[in-house]
Amino acid sequence: MANALSSSPEGSPAAAIKRRRGEILGWLRDDAEPLAAIFETITEMVDRLPFPAAGRFICHGAREIGNRLSGYVAGNAISGRTEYPQLVSGIHKAWVATGLPVGRGAFPTDLGANASPGDDAVKIPATVARMVAGLLGEHEASDQRQSTRAELLLHTLNRDAGGMLGTASLTVS
Image (cartoon, rainbow, N blue to C red):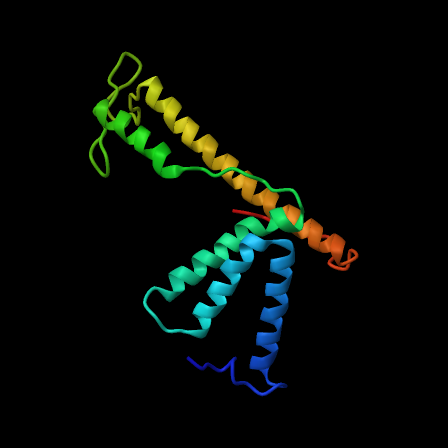
C-alpha cells in the first residue's frame, strides 16, 4: 500500500519524517536491538492507518519502548514489574473469605468496646491488612522504578548532549 511517506518529494516534511525514522531505527538496531522491531512495527502501523485498534497497538508499542529505552541508553537496566492482577487476586480472595464487601456493599462496623455507632471503623483481619499493605508497597516500588528509569534517561541524554540540556528534573505524580 502506497502512503504519503513512501512517495514524498525529497525536500518535503514527509521525506524528513521518513529520514528521521530511518535514523532512529538505525540507532535502535545498533544500540537497542529488541526495541528496533517494535519501533519498525509501530511506524508501519502509523503508515497504514486507519485499522481496528490501531491506537491501542501503537500506544502499547510506544509505551514498551519508553519503559525499556532507559536501560539501553543509560546502560543500567532497572528491572522489576508489579504484577497487579496477581496481587489483587490474592487480596480479593482473602477479602471475600472474611466477609468484607466487594464494590459498594456496606462494611460490617466494628462495634467493640472502643467504637460507637457512626464511627468509621471497620474490622479487617491482620492477614488481609498485610496483603493490602504489600500491594501498596509494590505500587510505591513501581513508581520509584519508573522515576529512576526516567531520571537515568534524562541524565544520560544530558551527558551525551554535553550538558546542553541544563538541569532536568522530573516529577511523577
